[in-house]
Length: 78
Image 1: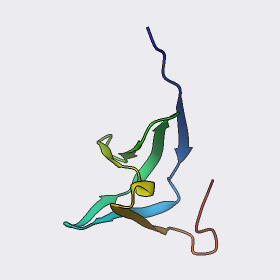
Image 2: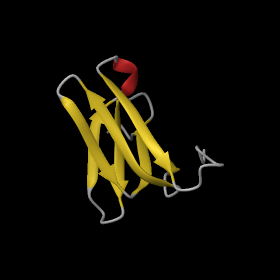
Image 3: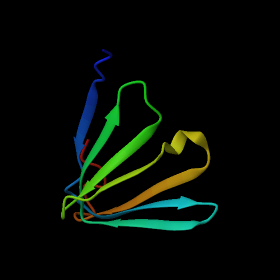
């Protein structure tokens, strides 16, 4: 059985995260964690309520991810 490895990054410094696609904007309020499978092409974001949002990786060219940090002096925490 193939065991996948996952990388997790803290997003709790963000108020929201938006994924912009050709079809519109998908907004995730209060994101807390970004999860990526090593070698995979999707991102998963867990929000403060425990809901997991999965989307095609931004490097596909089909989407753009944007966010607003809670502390403007620290726009990225990883």
